[in-house]
Length: 99
Image: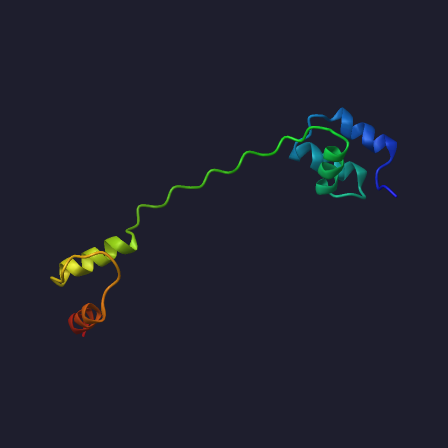
């Protein structure tokens, strides 16, 4: 049994090409189905669905990275400059300077 009457299917076909806004409007008008169901039905009957473009990620704020923090700590404590986390000896040097 289908949740869609022939009139509902006709309205979906008339709304082609379908997008998210149209699917939500149709689902609200139909009342007994979700917008996801409308999209699924449209695709199953061959009506084109145009997806939303992915949202662009926001650029990271100008905050220092972990590597920059480690480099600044090594420079401030005159530790050897190398890549990676602080060693146990370097951590104890940091602790001595804090205390």
